[in-house]
Image (cartoon, rainbow, N blue to C red; front, side):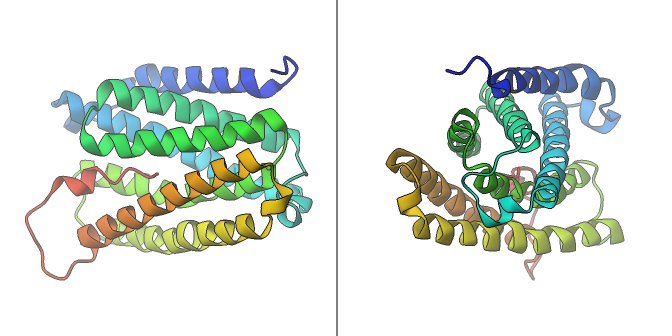
Length: 249
């Protein structure tokens, strides 16, 4: 434990901020159409909270790579204060969101997200405590670029916005495009990099990253299948709950 590591206090502050945002700020701005159902109101606030995290960390990861080109070449050693704080900020969100879901949304599909969050927290914490792997962790945060469009999609579905409308279809196009780029291709590249640089990583760190990456890629495959079934199926079927269970992982 390093008492001079600002990551710990950043994690704590981040968790508190997301709690305050959820139960005070977003609660005061929750639309009337979800207030009629307690679960829907919670789901709307949880999704809006997640959207804020995705926007901040997705943009933040891009900026960190822009400001520090060395991170694009070496994913292990280069580490800046901005990247360190961004990773810590993200850990705080995932800790808060894990607790929020475990308390307020106890159902089978939630356990998938809890496992996902646990894996992410484990990997990100290694980076935060060791002051290493910042570039690799930021690569993982690029997934949040796609999560922005996934969360917007969820909010539009809650608002009963037509899937045939221009706004929904435009978001849908960006959603699928960024899914391929920032989830399929990026995670595939990360897997290749991890295998090529196995000797450069501590054994425990390699296995933590490898297991987490394998689990997350499997979840993304399921997520993509649900997304395609919900938005791109040719024969319309009665609505199912999958539309509202496509929370970004």
